[in-house]
Each structure stands twice: as C-alpha cells, then as structure tokens.
Image 1 (cartoon, rainbow, N blue to C red):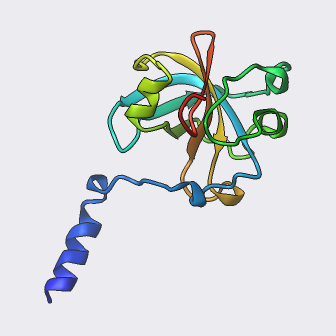
Image 2 (cartoon, rainbow, N blue to C red):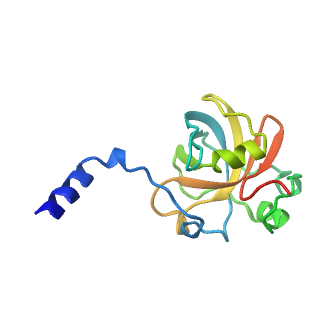
Length: 154
C-alpha cells in the first residue's frame, strides 16, 4: 500500500519532478538550430535552464557553418556539427533549453542570461524530435560571442 501511495503522490505532483536528460538521451547525429527570446531563466545546477520563445519562420543563418567557435577540452568537431545543423521539423514555439552546469558556464565567462535576451543555439533534441521540445546546447551564441558548452575551455 505504501508503494502505491508514493506512486500516486508522485504522479499527482509532476511539477515537482524536473526532467534532467543525460547526453545519451539526445540524437547527436542531427544538430538543431534555434534562435529566439528567453522567456524564463533557471540559473542553477545541475545545469542552467532557459525557456526560449522561437519565432515562426525560423531559418538557418547563411554563415552558421563558417562561424568561429572557441576550442574546448572535449574532442568535438565543431565544423561538422555546425555544417549539419538544421531547423527543427516540429513547430513548437517554446523550447526548454538545457545549458551547461554553472561551474562550466563560469569557466566560459558566460554572463547570467536574463529574461528577454535574444540568443541562438545549436544543440541536440530527443531522437526523431519526439517527446518534449527540449534542446541540450552544444554551442551558444549570445551578445556577439560564441561559447562551446560540452566541456571546459581548452
């Protein structure tokens, strides 16, 4: 009986259980490009999170594949990721954005992102874009700067 009570209690309060996805949950073969305005910010660990309002008619910037991004300690092929980036097939206007842990954001010297900020991102979503509209960020473009968020600066 206690187990069923716990399960029912957990199901009745879904807002208390925040989703956290490991890298293995995401389709790393299909990078997604998003840009828009930040509508919510949760600047805390286990990683900073944003809610991004994406404008309709999203298109890839012509210069995306040639953008310069900083080197990071993980062996990541930035050029290949940026070259393969596509806009999402799904039409959600609001996306949950998962950034790096705060210690890594500080290592990159990313200023705390505020509500209303405009930014662009390249990252990964769930396989076949099923489930939640969530993006785990690989590259963050904000205030004219690029940040690589998978690992620490090289």
